[in-house]
Length: 160
View 1 (tube, rainbow, N blue to C red):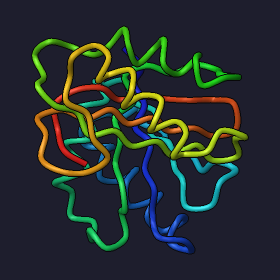
View 2 (cartoon, rainbow, N blue to C red):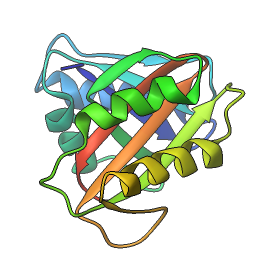
View 3 (cartoon, one colour):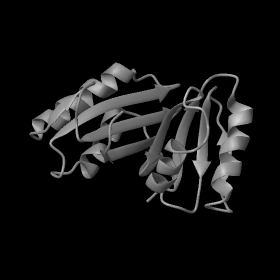
View 4 (tube, one colour):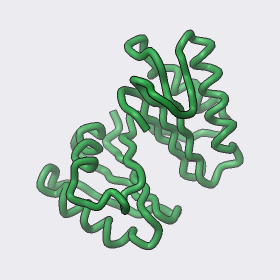
């Protein structure tokens, strides 16, 4: 399990929100680290706690929702060069506990487009017998976040 949460925030709010997130999470994990990335508006929380637990804390944090635009618990991270590298990992985490998946890719600084990533994962999920879509009601989600050639994924319960 990777103990990271990727957060996107409104541009130009990075520094203030970074401090607010660190201060808030410090009560739950004294070793928490919130760092900026080379991509504007993208922060990574590194924690000693489970990433899903920390993401849930942040969803309910007293930080304006208008500033935090997305909160993604990372359950696996790695380096990728091709779309196949991402699909192999996603396939390991899909579960028969889910009936339907919503798929979202955000690959910043990549030659692979978000829509190509989403199409490939949706087609793979459908070939495995799952209902998969870009938006809509589902019991599970697949989120792929990329920063350059680093990627993190979340596959599990929840909506986007």
